[in-house]
Structure formats: C-alpha cells, structure tokens
Image (cartoon, rainbow, N blue to C red; front, side, top):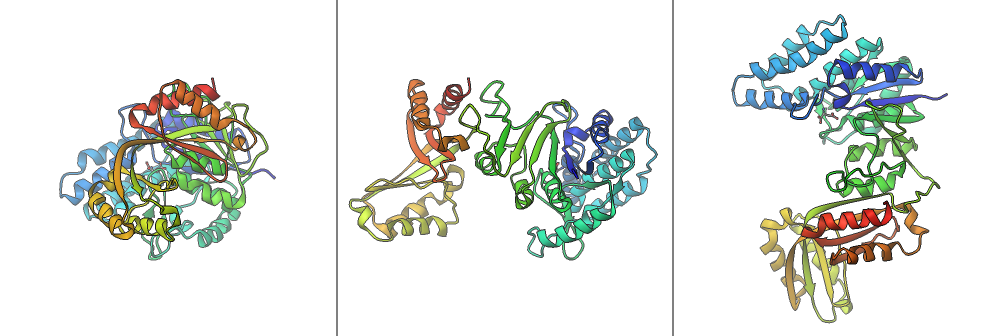
Length: 437
Ligand code: ASP
C-alpha cells in the first residue's frame, strides 16, 4: 500500500494562509500520512525566519541584553497563525518555558529547535493528527553524529502506533536527553529519516519552487526544471553549490531506495523533480544540470621527471593534509601537477604549504594562481552521448572563454572545467545555451 512522507519547508508554513494550502495538500490523499514541519520561514522578502529570531534571542540573552522585543516578535508569529486558523491552542506555558530557558542561557540548539517544535504542535492540532516530539525518536551519538540505527528502530515502532502524525524537523536528542539540531535546513534530513522508518513509497519535499532547476537562476534566466535526477547526480550538483535540499538528506532514503519528489506548495499540480536511485530515462538535453563555484586557487608544481619519482603525489598531498586543507581536484601532466583548493582556506596557510611542498619534493618551480571558478556539467546521459566534451569546449571557445582546467570523473557522470572567475557567468550561459536552448 502506498504511503507518503511529506516535509514542508519554512516558506510553506510561514503564515496561516500557507498552513491552509498545506492542509489541503495533505488531506487530498489519504496516503499522505507522516508530516515533517519546519519553523515559520519568510512571509515575503525582507522578513526574518523564526529560527533566525530564536538564534538572535539566544545571542542577546548570552550578552545579558534585553530579549523582550525579539521574543514578542516570535510569539506573535505563532499567535497570528493560531488566530487566523481559528484553532484552540494555548501556548502560554510553552512560551514561558522557552523565555525562562533563554534567560537561563539554556543550550543554543534547544532554543533553535523550538521553532519547529511549536509549528509542529500547531500543524498537528490543525490537521487533527498525532504529534510525535522528535526528541523521543531522533537520536545522536555522544560525539554528535546521527545515530541512524537506534533512530530507525525507535521511530519505526512509534510510527507503527500512529496512522497519521506530525513530527517537527531539525532536531533530536543526545544520549543525556539534551536537544541537538542538525545543521541549517536540517528538516530535510528529518523528512528523509521519517521516510526511511515509515518505508514510504515516496518522500515529498514541499518547498517554494517547482523542482530542481538545471542551473542557478541568478546566473541563467528562467532555467528549466529537472524532471528526474539520480541521487548521484544530485550529490554532484549539490556539492558544487546547487541548493534546494540539504545535502545530507539523501543518505537515509538512499539506503532504502525511496524516491524524493521536490514539490511546490504554491503550485501543487506541478510535477516537480523526482530524485531517484537509478533510472533508464535519459533527458533529451543529455546533461541533467550545471552548477559551479568561484573562489578557487591552483597550487602548480613543476619538476622534470616528476612521473618517475615514486611517491611524489603522495608527498605533496601529505603536506596539504598536514595543513588541514582539503583539496577539490588534482589534475596532473607529465612533469606538472596542480592541486586545486578553496582560496579562502589557503589564504593564511599559503607560506607554510609552499615551504612544506618545497621541502617534501624539491620542485623546480611552484606558484599559486588565484581566481579560478569551477563548473560541473552533470548528466548520466553523457556516458552514451558521444561528443559531449567537444560541445562544451566549442561552446566555451565560441564565447571567448579560456579553459584553465579540465577534469572528467571516472563515472562519466560529470565534466568539470576550471575557468577564470571573470568568465564564470559567460561560461555558464554558453554551456546552458548549447545543451538546453
Ligand atoms: N528552521 C531550520 C532552519 O531555518 C531548519 C529547517 O527549516 O530545515 O535552518
């Protein structure tokens, strides 16, 4: 039998009007049984998310400043919703407890988590569903990592006792019972955890866009929505900066091969994007999406007969590791090798790293180049389509963009090109237009 887990993001639960849309979506299908709620997000641009207000209160209290104004703003976000939905729910005791804990400098995570906790209570009341406090079913280990197996056992058992329930997103509990949150946007992870425990047929992630876009709309106007994307492709695109879903949200559902459907609360009949374990369906654009980031530097190392020197690459990378820096790519030639790292992180380690590499491998030349942007062109269709790389390079050449680095993953799922940061937008547009327009 079909069973759906739905997660609604902050913009979907920002005010009573959005709550009404959400309830209509849930009630339209009886298999929509488990709902994960975020805290109220922005109602319009310039507005502040409740989670941010909670963090602000925490900071004010920690600095012994007055929290009254910000706390009242938080309270009125919820009391407005309750009033407009005409539900009978008294939150006074809860507000008092939270205010007290702020004044007593209780944990930052506890305070931040109250945004989803209260929104979950309101949604459960409005829908007539049970409320399951995430602290009873989502667990972290002593070292702060997520305890997936204990969570899955306890949560499955809880869900089996409730046919319909609301679970607040974003937090769980530590072994000593204190509250811990995931990183920002973490309700996506809760949704995925609940989908796994419920053995859902699909995890619907409801937000304010009709799916995952093929490119960043700040760089490409009106990019197409991706119909279907595999978990692996999504990882590649998210890693390179594309956001809609928290990047850790894939892991729990990946385990049980549950598809994720990104849907738009404001346009519920749009199909949205399906994120699936695997698919034979190949998009006619060949590529699935493009993403990129600026702000990289290349450490270039040159030495004659480098290729014959055993352990050369290992010694270079060891210096990078000892300086606590993670590298992005590692392209090499016959007598040259480059290590690509984020410029911001290299900044104050540059002298140590250069000296370390000189000592480790005694190069003839070593120099750092900045202003590199990386663009990942991702698509499962590339394995079968001949000439994809040629099309990318021709499009870039025709737009006057010089390619500074090329890297094709062994999975043939992506081609990464490095270009000068000044050419970043031109390069994105050239590639998008070549494949999509
Ligand atoms: N409310 C939290 C945040 O703003 C978690 C979430 O919405 O997923 O990051």
